[in-house]
Length: 162
Image (cartoon, rainbow, N blue to C red; front, side, top):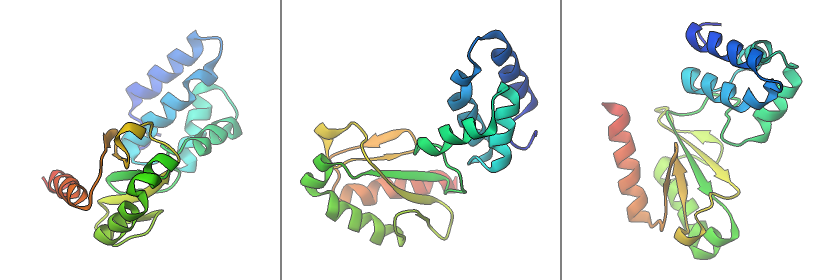
C-alpha cells in the first residue's frame, strides 16, 4: 500500500471517511492522491481507495473511468490535453493537433519514447475565448500557434530534465 500512498495520507483518508456520512465524496480526492504519488491509478489503487473509504471497488472504478484527468494506465511526466471542442477546432485546432503530433512524434493516446509527454484529446477545457487551447498538467495554454507550442514543449522538456 505504501507504494501507492504514503502512510500519513492513508491514515488521513481513513479518518476523513470515518468522519463523514458519505465517503463517496472523497473518491476523486483519493484517486488524485494515488495518481499524484504513483503517477497513475493502477487496479491496486482502485482497490486501495475502495478499502480506505469503505465503498465498493466498482464504485471507485466508475469514477476513475469517468474523469479524463484520472489516468488508469501509465502516462508521461507531462500530460497534454488538447481541446477538441468546436470552438478550438473552428480556430485552427486541427492544424494544432497535427503540429503537436508531429512535434512529439506520437498520436493521441500515446507517450513519447523518452516518457516526457502523453498526448490526449479532451472534449472541453473551458478556454473557448483563448481557442485553440491545451492543458499541460494543470496549466492551460491558449491562442496556440505552432511556434507557441514549440516554445511551450521546450520549456516543459527543460523542466523535466532538471
